[in-house]
Image (cartoon, rainbow, N blue to C red; front, side):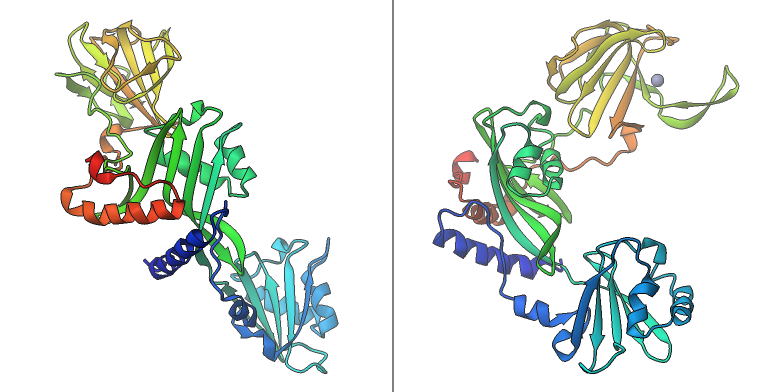
Length: 410
Ligand SMILES: [Zn+2]
């Protein structure tokens, strides 16, 4: 990992600053490199140039910006034609910055003109007899940030109030997707998060990974710690158990797959291609159908095609649906646990014999659950625990929560 050294340096720094200052609510790590950043930018030592800065004004085109610097419209046109891969004149917008670098203060024509495409990307134009250009990007650095908050309205709102990126709410919702229902957060729920933020020239440009967090939902604290395990990065609770849960392999015991998922399937009776967006499990009439994971029943109803059917939302990513039931055994809005009986096998709707058509939804799209790669739900093994415990202690001291006695939990 390219950032590992930076992160450990930042961790040390945060650790020290945490101990020194008890009142800090929101840490931003800053290494003392500001002087450096200001000297070397765009690949130039700006101190050795006379720099004129400006920004694109409304309706301004590049030729208008460059004309006062002695660059003719013809020269610019030739350059733009040859440099389509680095600069698109149609994408020049107001407020984008530019710099002209003069080798000598007395010069009327700069040696370089730099156009800032975005916070990260820029284009350098070397001004000589002809124009020559190249693109560059500012190096980004990863800093650690800690944010804590209380839910008043929503997690999204609380994070915004703390000046944190809203992306963080999505990331947290994913980490806790299997343990906390983010649709049912309560006023007074609390959280603390330690996460990475990408900076370019001291400006935050994006949220990175969450390293650790605590979420107190309905008075119950749930820690989540990032740990790299066999090249896979997962989140574990204090005792080394995974925050993810596996789905049951099938919604009925002792069944057989009578038809697999297929995007396109030749229908023998209709004699045309038809897709089958589910997996059929044939089982005797009346066999209990089980929820493959914890969740909330979002549909329990009847349609001509589906017959009696149930749909369950497991988290913000996954939903499952069970068709052709003889009888339903759950109501809309009800919370169900993994393995709970939600209905019974039948052949209601468009079904030729008793079976469950099991449909699996990922981010609103139907997918083949048999070919899905699910995140690991295995707990850490004993040999990994010492390293994990050390990490938990470090992260918790950074989060400044009372460290959980990991030994007691085991
Ligand atoms: Zn089916």
